[in-house]
Length: 450
Image 1 (cartoon, one colour):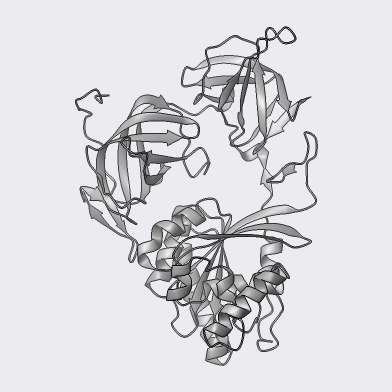
Image 2: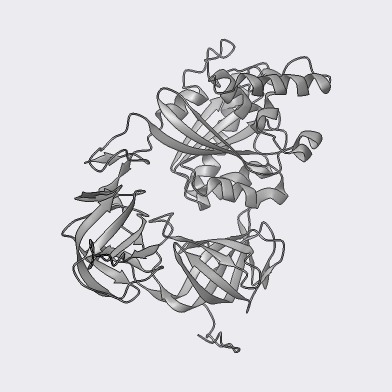
């Protein structure tokens, strides 16, 4: 079994010196998410001197003796003034063992859509809980979102242990309650860590105040959690972004299809299907970084050449003949509504899947999910900002979507307002919850009758 890193270094290198982990933090208001992120950056020596000086100055101006490390991530002026996190703050840092892309997401209910954005590409989610309050409504909400987005690893960080005298029974009770709930949601791996972000206990260095805990620190777990990709288990997918035909004297017959491999690997000599047309051909060459290679894998950007002269354009998808997804004009999915304007039954939208954008109509909204208790509100008629619901969409042209459970990249899509280009909702194909219903017959006018 071969493993490949998130970011390959050459056409025949199988493992880079360090791997990349994308992770997100989430939690209820004032649980200490930004303080944890700031502590993580500070104690791992990932903060520049001028950044730390600016934080110290801002802290003194607010009457604080010690630097408020939360200011390292709460970058917007409104965030600093209100003492809350509003937008997703991305931070990049590295240790000798791994590179990280961190998304610090808001805790307020009205910013659920921001957490969906931050966690959509995450391989791990850190859910914070205030040790004094235990598992609350937002904790369950964030666990449900992590499960819905198929985040493979979840860390429960029980914060502010210093305010409960570092008591082991408090941590054990919270860890048991959260683990039971998250396991029922289908979260595959849960790791509970007792911490004090303010004091630095178990964030980067082990805590002397909790000798009863023998597990890893937050950073140690982030550095060692497995994120290697077994490409033999991936569905190979290549969305075409651009057709290259230089038509020069040096390359009179060159025709290549450029793009980024979304998943899996492609090899010279492999038979592929072009979707949605269904035509087949054989890969004759793969060009990567100006050189010909025999194999290429996600997420490399390459140009693929085929043996046959097929009509292929932007938005088409190449997949192995033996593992091609089915095409359909009926999309059943779970979506998170991210726009301020509602999404309604009968609304005309654009659906963007990888490099393909097609016209579509929202045919049905069977249910809206209430994340507080995972109950369903049937036939709500519309979804508003931060709602998560089940939808059925009819597209004007066939699409080759994978189930989101099989591929987060090729099983996801966006619904867009055709009038102004606003992103309306982020969708996960095939994801469902109890209460979803079949779509009604497609019927519409004004050129949108599919």
